[in-house]
Image (cartoon, rainbow, N blue to C red; front, side):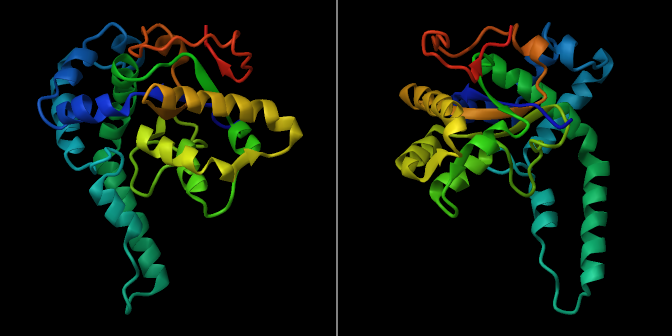
Length: 260
């Protein structure tokens, strides 16, 4: 069936100024949300393992890049070039083995980080509702960008992530975050707006809703963050930390919805 993907407003400035430093140092937010009422709905952790997991997450987070997306070891594995005297078969086998070794060593931590970071972000700096439906292929079928343009490069981040990312792709069938685009990059996207367009007349309504959603982000100095197969029944209960008032009915938006 594929994954169900959504796009949300996101305060990237707060994320980078307050949340990332905490996750790489004291981990106060980790303690707070591991023990929150919502954590019990999505984390399913035994209380006697929490301190160990928090220590592992902090240690792991220190190996993430400045954008808090790519793990330096995984990135090195994924981008290593073939040596001159190395056969292609050996090169591929070594990369697969290195990937497996990384997964064996860090897979459990990544599985812990994704739901916990989702909970922290939507409690501290992102609004679950209202959100833009990306669907399985709705966004990529409806919103086009001129090849090799700045707009195409930035829009790719709505549904994909880079080599070495610890997050999920939009077609992974996993549950968690995909990627985010900062307010600064949204400004660059809108400066190149002439290079984005609807696929055809039938997709004009979706394209219009997408544009309105991005314009709301820009007007409020926000970025956007995408997720896949989100835990909607829990995330909808979290009060939005963003001071946004969006009446989707008044704006006549069909593809920006509140999940009730």
